[in-house]
Length: 417
Image (tube, rainbow, N blue to C red):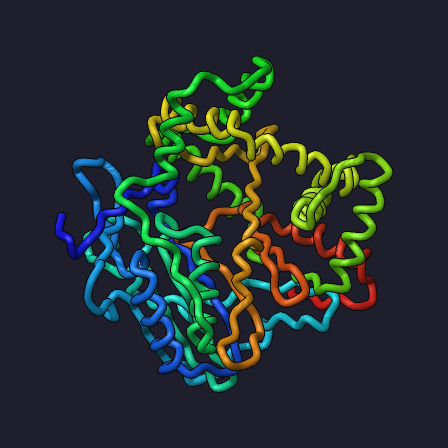
């Protein structure tokens, strides 16, 4: 390997289904200085050399890696595009934080935030030597759309949040430090290897059995039959479930009211604590599980998450992924009549992706996963002083959510169904 480059391997967690998708963070702002934005983004990539790299497949390691340039100017390692539309962007895509609650219809088309030449899957990015970060701007007569696209193999929500905050610092002339350059040994993979070699960390055989049972229920090995079964389930939901793409926004006042009510009830039935995300996930699920209160569901959600932070659970997950699934996994999709119906919630609040100032008022923030988004994967995110819940679910379920909002704020609900 040349001394001018560094080969950084990705971990096994970065392979599998993540290889097929890219993620786009989209912003709607009043206006943007394209030259200043492009210059700031180039400076970020020059300082944060990992983002100037390109994805390559290592035959020796049998995994995806990032080939990082250690020297020279890397301005070309940022893809920046800009287009213009001879029209106004509809106001239906704007989040009005002064309204207590909003139910917005379908998101703006992703083409406003992601140039059509951007590739999604990891293999295509590698063969074309595509940059890791792509930024696209679409100008309208009344606003501008800004999109930041990245491969999910390389960055997760927290990682892109670091890029967004570095970009914000560069835009406003503030100093910032790039994360240290990784070595040729992936520390995450090292930790996973150590867990694999260690004796079982469960002190209760029943808990260990329950953990593996849960993993077998939720994940399966990619194969023609399993892929076909998942595709059939997705198409079934799309055709007969009347899947709709919606976004619910609760401003700070409405959110605060919901949090106070639920936390007061939690204190009466349990001494533990629950988070905002516990409550929002449970509030959505409550519309489908009427026999339990939001507080009861929030407590169950918190108790279900806590074991996943322990080494024993991580060890079990790692062994199940390697030994049971051969290193790659597929989220198991049941049929519409199955007893165990899968939902997936992704909490993106930790990224603080709304904490960037493009130099003008921000009207909205949107998220996309391409080339395909399946139903009942619900994202939670923060926007200004409120939270929004975004995803694709059955029409009947979104209507149940609207009814729940009407009970929270009967006189101040704006809905676009």
